[in-house]
Image (cartoon, rainbow, N blue to C red; front, side):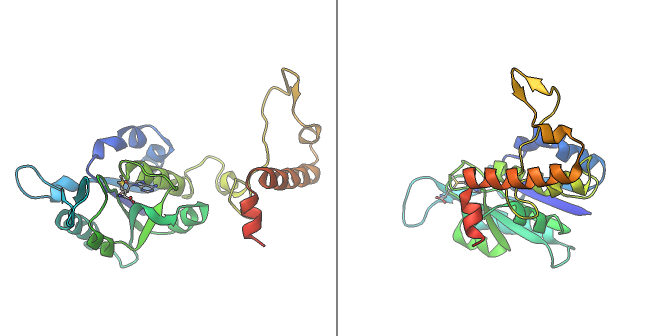
Length: 230
Ligand SMILES: C[S@@+](CC[C@H](N)C(=O)[O-])C[C@H]1O[C@@H](n2cnc3c(N)ncnc32)[C@H](O)[C@@H]1O
């Protein structure tokens, strides 16, 4: 079973995420285990300080080595060498569906959520991976860790109602392109009709329509995906 440890200075940020979501359901179903670890539990002194001024000058504070080394080493104690330790950072590899699929096969993942101006550069030596969720800067790594956890956990066996089929035809899966448009009841809403072929019951035709539409949509919205396959 996959265990995910998330180290953060704002552990309460994960409350809603862990109490009321598909992720919460996955934990209940024992598809995975998620531990939220307060970095300050590994800090010293009355104020449990985790950050300090930056050598060489510059605005803001930087996260210090000692609590991070203790916290990550604590998570790795007794675990196999296959653990993935993921530093969240705008400078990391761009997280995508392939990365989620790859991580869903692991047994132990540790997420490191940075804050302030980020991490002392030496903390990077703890990480096996560094991931960014996009080219923008957030105040902390919690939302990045939550987004990655969500996309990983929904791939675990038994988590989604439809099983493997629920994720197999989604955007970025299989051939890596976007998903075709989908429709539900009613057939006619304010003059906008569900395409006839989807009501035909002809599975081969429906499949062909979906493939063509998925390609059309990808050309229109994400031509970069198609170009990357050339
Ligand atoms: C304010 S940011 C630090 C930014 C850093 N000074 C820089 O310029 O790259 C604080 C923390 O938020 C997290 N973070 C911010 N943006 C992120 C992104 N796009 N993806 C993943 N983590 C991010 C990281 O953990 C980071 O250490």
